[in-house]
Image (cartoon, rainbow, N blue to C red; front, side, top):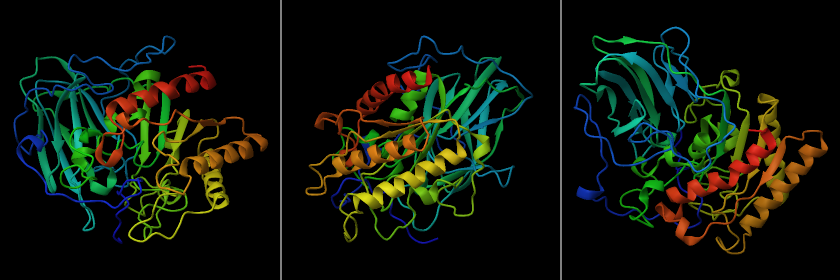
Amino acid sequence: MRRSLSSLPFLAFVLVVSSCKTGEDEPDRVNASSPTSPDLDVTLPGATRDGGTSGRDAASTAPPDPEPSGPPRVDFVGRFDARDPSAPTCGWPGCRIVARFAGTRVTARLEEITESWMSGGPSEWDVTIDGALRPKLVMQAGSHEYVLATDLAPGEHVVELYKRSEAQTGSTRFLGYDFADGELLAPPGRHLRKLEIIGDSQPAAFGVEGVGHGPMCPGLNYAARWQNFHRSFGAFLGVSLKAEVQGTVYSGKGMVKNIWRPDKDTMPVLFPRAVPTIAGSAWDFTTYVPDVVVIMIGGNDFAIGQPEDDGPPTLAQFTDAYDAFVRTVRQHYPDAHVFLATSPSVSDAEPPERHSRTNVMAGVASVVARRNDAGDARVYAATPPVAQPAELTGCEGHGSPEFHERVAHDLAPLIREKTGW
């Protein structure tokens, strides 16, 4: 596979790499065969220390929480390459591996997959037991057994692994849970509502863990340690709307041009893949059919290209590519409500003279008009207010957790209005 540095963010300035710090900057981790540490003192969408949920827009008309059903099995939510059913592989962030079991202990065997061009890895996964967040897993190369919980109270429990990081820092094969003397049960019920987020670094929650460390975060700005899709606006929307969330997001990507100009794998090229870094991994679109799709992309098309800038696409080129992509999305999801969102962090001020926000909004407006004129009334424009500097305090000027929560708060009413949720 050719080298790809498309993890570079959409902001248009040269990436600076500083020396990696140790000590207080080291992430909490659970290593292979290590005991589980106390819960982390953080709150994420759908995973809190008390086992509850968080979110600013709890829907009063949302359906009740689903009940466990079906035969004993492990549930996989999100895109997995399942060509080898004994080792499903996740690359996109937001993948979830969920199991309900009776027992007092659970471990997982996982294999980390990287390519020679990847840097900033390995992958990182959140662990929750009965809804309570545990220390994250920082993967190790190769296959290892990871201890997730010991000395649980006898009875039924739910374990979930959640991929925080993006595919360009590594993919992970799941080789199985081990419940020691316990047993696998029917999985927890799944929400009927389904949401898919498609986009670049901002919807991927690039750099969200770097607040207070930036703007140029220690080490690599695009390292997995600074990423966390669990804190993205898509994850917050999932909590607010009581919907499953699939993250089809990849930093540095555009519709016509990526920020790393030699990389030609734009989002339309990656969208059909089960794992974005594996060209032959065709995704079966029938396995996850979202009710709502939010597309937030375009800043990279009009950014200053790296390593050498060849200029942005014309507005016509951008609009035609965006329109073709929306038609592809519609082919796979005939009934979905599709929201074309302009990122609040895309502005006309940066880069100068590119008029990025104006162009993205104009392209979106034209695509919506084309689709509506063609009889597709379920394609809409969404324009959350432009971000303030205080919201863009993640690595290299990306959104903070508060930014992502605000964007979810902005989008949720529009989604409810169109869907009736």
